[in-house]
Image 1 (cartoon, one colour):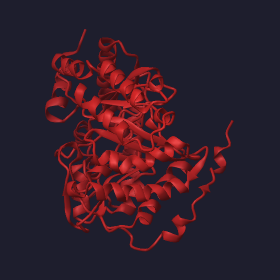
Image 2 (cartoon, rainbow, N blue to C red; image 1 turned 45 degrees about the vertical axis):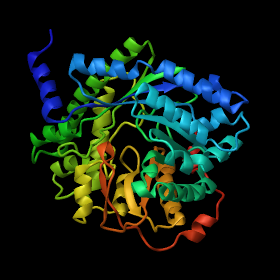
Image 3 (cartoon, helix red, strand yellow; image 1 turned 30 degrees about the vertical axis):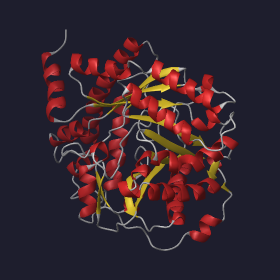
Image 4 (spheres, rainbow, N blue to C red; image 1 turned 180 degrees about the vertical axis):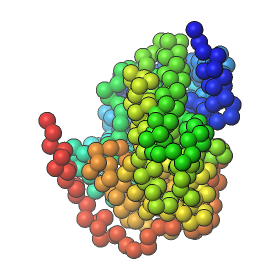
Amino acid sequence: MINYNYIMETISMIEKEKLDIRTITMGISLLDCISENGQICRNKIYDKVTKKAEKLVMTGEHIEKEYGIPIINKRISVTPISLIAQACEDTDYVKFAQVLDKAAIAVGVNFIGGFSSLVHKGYTKGDDILIKSIPKALSETERVCASVNVGSTKTGINMDAVRQMGKIISHTAKLTEKQDGIGCAKLVVFANAVEDNPFMAGAFHGIGEPDTVINVGVSGPGVVKVALESCKDEPFDVVSDTIKKTAFKITRMGQLVASEASKRLNVPFGIVDLSLAPTPAVGDSIARILEEMGLEACGAPGTTAALALLNDAVKKGGIMASSHVGGLSGAFIPVSEDEGMIHAVKIGALNIEKLEAMTCVCSVGLDMIAIPGKTSPETISAIIADEAAIGVINNKTTAVRIIPVFGKDVGDEVVFGGLLGNAPVMDINGFSSKSFIERGGRIPAPVHSMKN
């Protein structure tokens, strides 16, 4: 029998504590769309995406209404376009981005990810063309997201790709200057990218995935924050147990939605991503969870330890609630999308160096950070290199989604709107990394990569 108290607790989580399903993401393989003729390939892509995902949004809306569970985004991820397009003779892939955008608009999803390239060990022809196409592609599309994987624990870090991505990010920001560099909010540079990530902007459909799949990303920082309010001054053992129990409840809801969507769409269920994903709304912040543990402000000494506890407890609670946990799973710390992070930056408690330290223990990395537009491409590349090194050495996924904002400097504010929020422009170390980045080559894989 369903316990009445459990029902009321879930209703309270949704209505008062901003519990939601952040995304239902349909992964679609495009391997059967490959053609030597670019136009034929694009036609196949459009036809397959619109056919497979035609009922995705409607199904999500029906589940929302039936269960009363908010589903914030419906999204699509596709096979990295660098793999699909390189069989044709096209010399740029902007038209591929445009057809993805057209398909996303046709089926009504918020974003489509997979304008992607995996170059952690080297480039193919398709990788080279796709990466060069990113700035124009993101400036001429609305819903397309791009990602590039530049390193892995098994291969090390491709510093030629790191060097190039600094230039690509800067160019993308320049082409979308009138929108405060919004193109860069749709571009992620990864180390150890995963194949089943439902979250944008880094989602792509891996080659080890089935033809189509449903992945769900849950959220609920507000629920965790409220739960911790009941154990003030308790030892960290109690804090961890409280988070685990709360993560279990959140994940069970995600499992329910994933199973329902899978059944109704007749598409295999892939994974539930446990990541706590904040929003700009008050009461839906990772930073406020950390402060509830006793920090005066996010960024104070102890912040990294608090985040490590949170991340670990979320995973421990979540894996008991679902047999198929994947994606990134943990806690995101995107500055512009987290009201508490924004506040911490504004009062001087949080800087980019502390954020980098926090990425050693969180889900991903330096996320949705606005920096002055005058920042050199080499400095951006060096930031990417640092973050990739954290991922490669620690055998975890790390990423950089950084936004140079031309015409603005430290202390100015950028407003993106919606889930992307608003970001204070952060200060960047002014000392040069130019000679370091210009070396190129590959940073070798760490010694612990030799496992077999």
